[in-house]
Image (cartoon, rainbow, N blue to C red; front, side, top):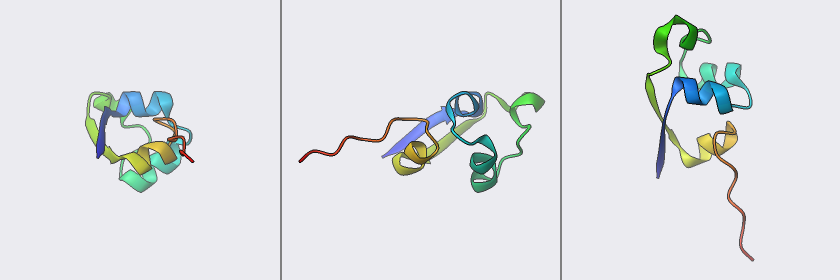
Length: 60
């Protein structure tokens, strides 16, 4: 499954914006330069790792 979001939403929710940008290939200033509406697609694992969505609770 994949998560679709915008760079603006990612910036707002991300734990570490610099790491997100470096690993996903974006400039740290992309949102300031008018790229906030750019849509990005992440795996659930990446979205959890960057803090965009909460980690799933494990069931015992």
